[in-house]
Image (cartoon, rainbow, N blue to C red; front, side, top):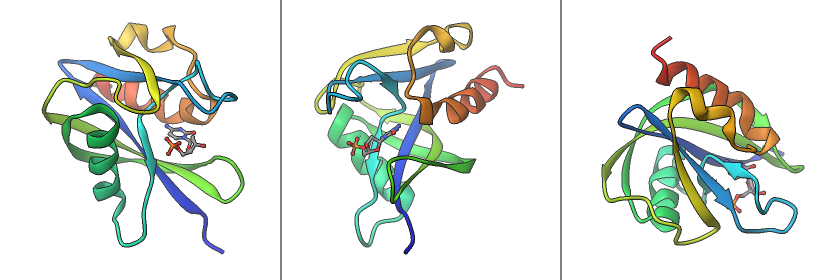
Length: 131
Ligand code: DCM
């Protein structure tokens, strides 16, 4: 069986990376993530990401490029990550999150990221620094 895909966005704006603090489920609450969610049947990863960021943050966004790699989540799920530009709107905590932070490159390690997001966050931070 192929694993189901969860997509997440490394949202960049003005040289900063968006971090979102989860409010649920209890075992993930309080940890920070790249916002996103599950790909639904018939959707591409990019389509799912645009939909999820609209639902969770109230923004219109544009996926830029996929960060190479795929990271295991709970059994049967893998995480894929894209860098994302904001097209319009200011991110707000509409669903799943209770705080947002825009992190400058030297602040990226200041929040307690979900373990499974850390490799993609490190790569996103490298790109943010222009390295
Ligand atoms: N998830 C994750 N890292 C992310 C986004 C999601 O580990 N950046 C996990 C949390 C959930 C599952 O994927 O177990 C589905 O996410 P959601 O509940 O946001 O749809």
